[in-house]
Structures are given as structure tokens and as C-alpha cells.
Length: 126
Image (tube, rainbow, N blue to C red; front, side, top):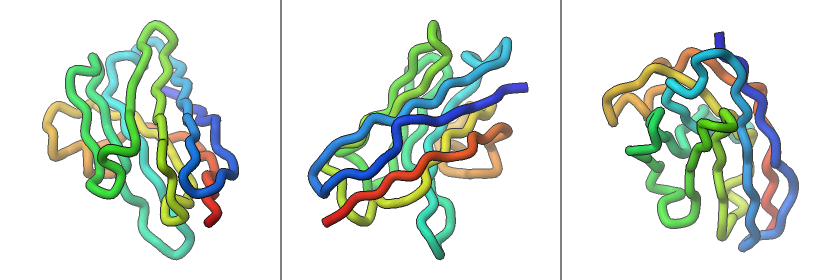
């Protein structure tokens, strides 16, 4: 079992930055690939970014490439999402997820993730 708790959400003006954290607990948490997802009101959940268990590979949605950076610190069992140059369309509930993922394309598939956090709200005003 892996438990995930997100933090770092909040309200920011367009162009600003936020850093989200996802603290994982569980004996094998560091062996899981991790992903960040978001869901805006009335929209489907979409992938934002993913990182392999050893941080050797990272993946990003086209909409956030060059603005968001995913990283992890396995010693702290924590995954981060640094979000810069935020836009109003980035407004959503952001959730982290963990899964045993070994193929790049699977990082974009919500069904490949086994554990999910509760989410944290990010609001970007214009």
C-alpha cells in the first residue's frame, strides 16, 4: 500500500509560480513511477507530468512543456511539480499518483496508476 498526500496548492496570478509536493508513505513507495494529473471543473482528468522511479525519465503534457518540471527525492519519498509561468487555464485540482510503469506511453494512461492522492487546488487568476 502507498498513501499519497499533496500540498502546495493555492491561488496565484497569471505568470506566477507554485511548487506542489506529493509525500508518499509505504515501504516500497520509492520503487513506483509517479505522475501528476489535473482536473478542471467539467473536464476530464488529464496527465500533467510523469517521472520514473529512479528519475531517469520524465514525461510532460504538451500544454505544460517548458513551464512545469517534475522531480523526486526518494530519500524523502516526495515528488515535486514546479509550475512556472502559470496561466488561467492551469486552474484545476492537481493530484499525484503512483504506479508500476515501465513504458513511456503508459505514463499518460490513468489506468496504469494504482494509488492516488486527494488532490490540491490550484487557481490562477488573470
